[in-house]
Image 1: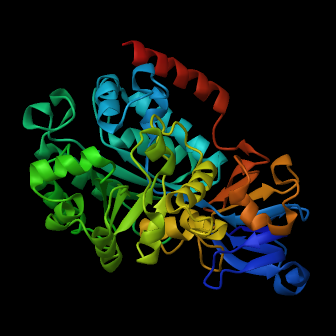
Image 2: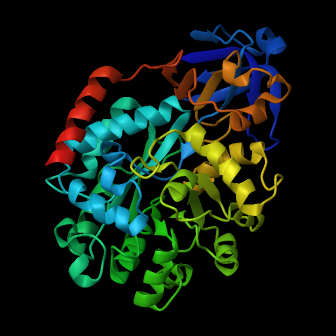
Length: 457
């Protein structure tokens, strides 16, 4: 049993049930779990024994729960800013990139996953869900799982899939889709081999048919049935991302995207959908009543000109909402602090209302909101019995100059891009702004070699 004391915290943003923000506080961690939140003046009386390790933040850091990323495509770090895809909307963008992604290899999946995870971690993310839906040339979800395990990111791995190619009216090329029997067989294997539903779990599996325009109705239904035969396996897909997505659903299913997913059993507390830019009020009400979650990806939605998701309305109807950076080829980054700030600004522009959403509400989306979307009650807050996932940001930085009157709001209003410390499952993964789990320089070199080869194949 090891203990860690993080002391002399300038401001501690707990995100606990009382939404406390504490001045001069400390955190005691035992192994991978938060044991106590302590007022600085009470440390000596509260501690029964000296801690094994002490991190003194010297009254110059703000500490908050680790951020939660609810939607991503790690492999897309390899195809950022592809010239032919720079000015495309969603369907055009996919048609440009599918042939390039068809050259992915197991090593490319592994290396790109670590690069994406590193960028997420350095920007404050401690838990991430990734949606891997393309498996050419022997690629498997196992390649990604093993890569992320070594970097120590808390991970929700999605077994994505595509089964309806161009010849059947789908979007992807036929050679990139899989047989549905193979998809379901591999999905069950992955759940049985990797899924850990215990509290403080570092790895869970999600079943995630890619989208209504890449899989069949049968696969949607059978994936839901398979997921629900296991405890804690959730469902995820893309939905209502832009107007072309709506048109496809009406033309092929005779239903709106919301009515379609309802018809195949994809509404409920164990489901979350990415984007949902084009949901109408009735659909939002259904999401709220059923507890169906949404991964809000504002940067990608703007990059592809998909529109602005009605986040204010979703929150008003109590829809669970978290943030997602989405693919690194449609963002084109994996910075979760930047995503939170963009969500904040987009909501105000969409509603033409400077009071449409507050900075603290956006911090909730990035922490406890994301935790709810992923079905977790052990992350997203700093409180006893919660997982030891938290980040620290030095307040003596130029971006926060003049913002001391409200440092919590400043994390969203101001442009903070990196954290100084990050603990995941009680392990220090960022120390004074540097990753401790991997060496970035050789990883970046190999990643760029693979990206060049992928683009020029």
